[in-house]
Structure formats: structure tokens, C-alpha cells
Length: 195
Image (cartoon, rainbow, N blue to C red):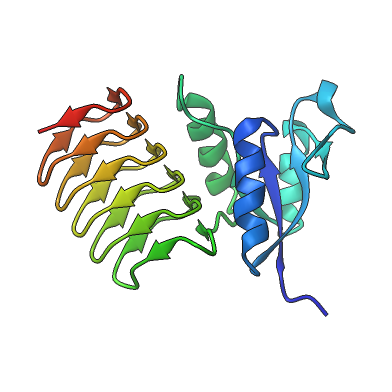
């Protein structure tokens, strides 16, 4: 008998494919389906069916499912924020998801709805806010702070005690040196160096 918790993904685009890989790498969750737009109902992504639309969310929450927002965050964070706020307001379970091959310190703090993806490292005393994406091979060093609703892209390096303000996007291979500060709602281009 499986002890995995049933989880529903919200958003069936490209980022969803990566989220599925992360969830399948672990033993904690069983994906039961995906919420997306009405015209996509019945389609599948990585063998999981798009079964519901946003109109079904209240009923799904009432059934006790866990949820993860599998919509990416490049152009805007607004939709991720809106859905997260709705789910939290209605007492939905939004767990932290960690890839089996990610390394997360037991002394790090990670808030609800965040995903730590393949090969990412989160070191001691780092703090990561709600509904963040810590993408593949990103490094969050000791004492770094990542605000709510941030996307730290593939291979980005957030060095010790650096701070990233909420709703920010840090591009692939960007480097924040130690104790640097990125203001809220920033967009840091790929391969940038922030001092």
C-alpha cells in the first residue's frame, strides 16, 4: 500500500514537465492530475492528464489534496501569486517539494509552496520564502535570504548572506556576491554579476 500523498499540479506547460521529474524522483507525492485551461482538458503531459480547470479548485481543496503551482515564472509572477493566495486563503496544503538529488541543509528554512529542483544546493541558515522556484543546479549559500515568489534560475549562485527581494527573477548563471542586495521585483539577466 502506497504512503504517498496525492498532489495536484496547477499549470501544464514546460515548467510542469520539470516539476513532474522532481516529484517522481522522490517518494513523498503521487501526482493525480493537472489543472489547466478548459481547451486543454484531456491532454496529457508526461503521461499525466489535464483533468480540471480553475473552476474546480474549491472542490479539489475541499477533498484535501495537496497542490503545487507548476506555472513557470519568467515574464511575470502575477499568476503564480494570484493562485497561491487563493489556495492559502482556502487552507489548501502547499508543501515544499525537494528533488531527490538536491542538497538542503537541515538548518535551512523553506516556506510553503517552494520547489527545490534537480541538483540545487541550499546551505546552512539560508531562508527561502513562499512559492519560490529554486531551479536546477542553483546554489543558495549560507545565510542567504530569498523573498517570497522568487525564481532563482538554473545555475545561479546566491552567495553567503546575499538577499533577493520578493517577486524577483534571477537569470541563469547569474552570481550575487556575498552580502549583495537585490531589491523586490527585480529582473536580473542571465550571467550577470551583482556586487
